[in-house]
Length: 137
Image 1: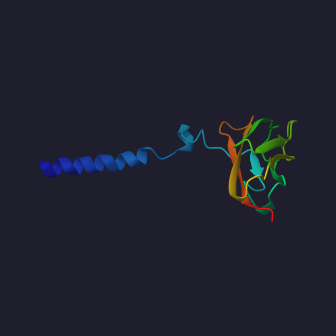
Image 2: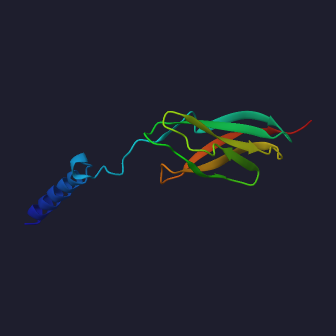
Image 3: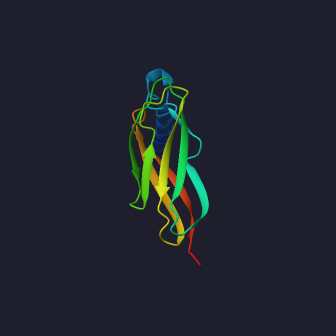
């Protein structure tokens, strides 16, 4: 009897795993879509930057969706970075940018982020740039 219960439990658990596979016919893949923006690079290695010299890092993207996209917010990860971005709607097939200006005040390695929110995606995109600030001699 115990063997029968264990066998039935194993069979039930095995079949349950198949029932949760996404099936486009029943709408379970509704949340899976292509990304409306294709970024040239989401991470930029800037190398060495002289201390005291601001560095501009540009992230370029292309609108690969079928409708216009608007950047609704750009938030640098810290006070040492300012951001600029394409303010007008980006038509399908066109490109836009997000620029981060990093104040290279402190010597040493750094890794900074910029978070971009658009009208086309619910989840913001986090862009990364990193490098090393070299002390003045």
